[in-house]
Amino acid sequence: MRIPVTRERIITAAAELVDSHGPDALILSRLADTLDVRQSALYKHVDGVDDVQHQLSLLARQLLAEDLRAAAVGLAKDDAVIALADAWRSFVRSHPGLYAITDRYPTAPHADLVAAVGEVVDVIDRVIAGYGLSADDSEQAAWSLRSALHGFCVLEAQEGYPAGANPDRVYRRLVELLCAGVIGILAPAQGDNDGTVD
Image (cartoon, rainbow, N blue to C red; front, side, top):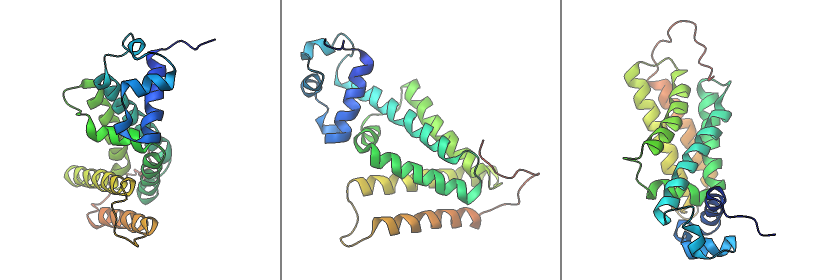
């Protein structure tokens, strides 16, 4: 018995397709083939490739936020940063195509995508808050952490590193530098906050 096509099945199949073959593989005819249906059947549930890309971009950020939150909860300061960084890298390695879609589909003016990005940023902010920085330093540190991890993961996924370079060694040094950088601008902690992410 054929499994009915639903919007959820289409998005799940699309996520698997781009992770296996890259974002350029997201063609409705190919997606229909993976679901063993005619392309016309997809239009009952999605409005086209743009709609599917939108949903994949949303899904990628939601899953990333969940992974980051789960990794950092209960940890503080450098331990939380390291756990968050490891989770970020692991996510991109597991979902290279899904993550790549986030750079291909504009966030604004879509409220759902803005909110999903906000969830990722919120986890980063909570991790950085554990250091007790001033508001300005905390904002700068969070932005730097997000930029560094995104940049490294994109370069690694595209094999954009020099020949002979060891990505694992570069990654470890990057995280060490990020932690050292936060400590370098560390302001006196306020109150008895132990910096644990909740």
